[in-house]
Length: 273
Image (cartoon, rainbow, N blue to C red; front, side, top):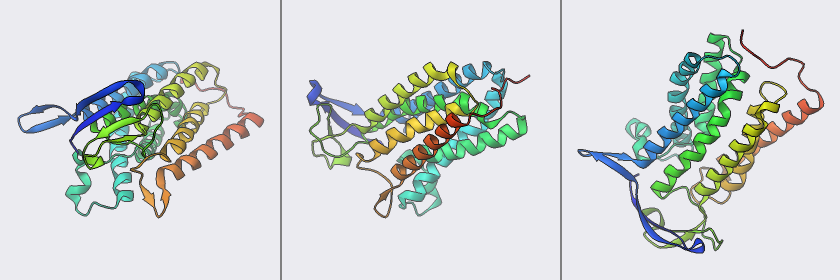
């Protein structure tokens, strides 16, 4: 959904400025900042994965092959997740119209992971090896992608008086000036910190799959807390779907990390011949 937003950060001394969600137009066709930022995030994630994959002798051509299946699968999964839990799309045209907004990261991760698993079987490269290479890139892409939400004036939280509160006036606030939690910013910063910490730890990993567990454990913790502040969550009854899923992911990752800390896997780290 393309819109004009008036934004400020009064607690930080940043006065009101206007953000247009349209980057540029080609004739009557409008290109949104959201699309450009998400695309940039995907490029960064794939580039990062290529760099990491070289360290285990997985070729750039292999990663390109993965990307050709994973990227479209992730977009389709992100859209389906949103449509399923949003419940306001009745026709096929509405379901596929992503220009009107509606992509959910968990759907993208689930579908993308299935695509990675299938391609891994074909290429005979262990799934956890590819996962260790690409999952830090996923939270980097998510950190970047959240700024697409900023350009749309969306993905914000409830009203607040915290020092970093964001003043917002757009169609989603009914054109009323409101100071809200900038949850897009919270998640972007959380993911950037996680990305940095994971890369510091990366050379010290003990077994294949450890990075996957650390990345999703970190993301699950942050998303579980931040989702509780948001005003646009997807629900099942009174339960926030993404908050519930984030909590499950966090508990599962922590449990497996503890298990492997007590009983480390005996298999050595993988390096493709």
